[in-house]
Image 1 (cartoon, rainbow, N blue to C red):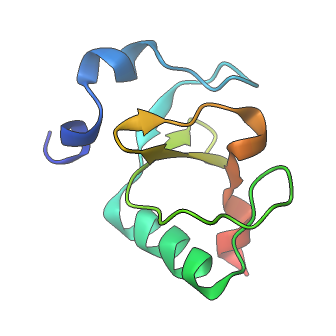
Image 2: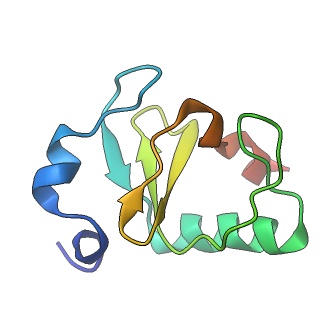
Length: 92
């Protein structure tokens, strides 16, 4: 597969699930990451806790239903429910 697995090992990805729904996760594609980062840079991207996302988004994992993204920071997926980023923000 390519660069997605350079950030997180394939073995780890196979066992990670959403902490809320237990759905599987997949690496976000480059276009989704770019859209998330653009909204973050504009100051309009918020996490599930309603707080602005401060750290740059270079990689993320997307929940199977494509409703939530979990950022990956320094090769560590941030798998906390409140840190999840609702993807419906990208629709507006």
